[in-house]
Length: 177
Image 1 (cartoon, one colour):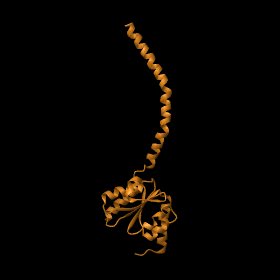
Image 2 (cartoon, rainbow, N blue to C red; image 1 turned 60 degrees about the vertical axis):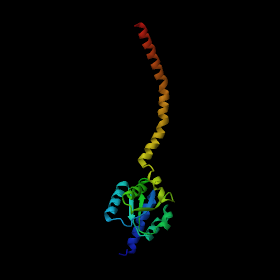
Image 3 (spheres, rainbow, N blue to C red; image 1 turned 90 degrees about the vertical axis):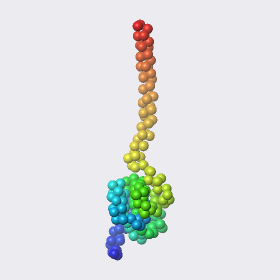
Image 4 (cartoon, rainbow, N blue to C red; image 1 turned 120 degrees about the vertical axis):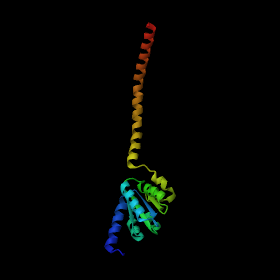
């Protein structure tokens, strides 16, 4: 069924708006997947904050034009599904990698991040990026470490004095007995 001009414009503007806010993108070939598998993919994507859309390639090229995912334009050929990470940079890559393990016909063709294409074989590198919460926890750990060390260092002379006094007391009690 042919799309009307208004429908095409709506699709392009929707995908362009998502691409403008996205952290990374994955394009994967979905040829041979069943409807049930595609439904599972969409459910997992919704749960993980990833925008997934099957778009005609000409519309997808127009949508990514002017965004940091313009580097994907030449590779948009064949039946592709686009996945954009909305919440954390590795979300779409994590979704594609995990889904490809279950569905052998799902093949990652392109991964883009920061305006550059990344080889599909290196999807694990992007997928292993920490989530926002993990990154904040790592940052807090790094910021907290020097303060903890300072507190331990400042408390040590007092603790050493208490241990020394306790040892002298114990020696005197043993000598008196």
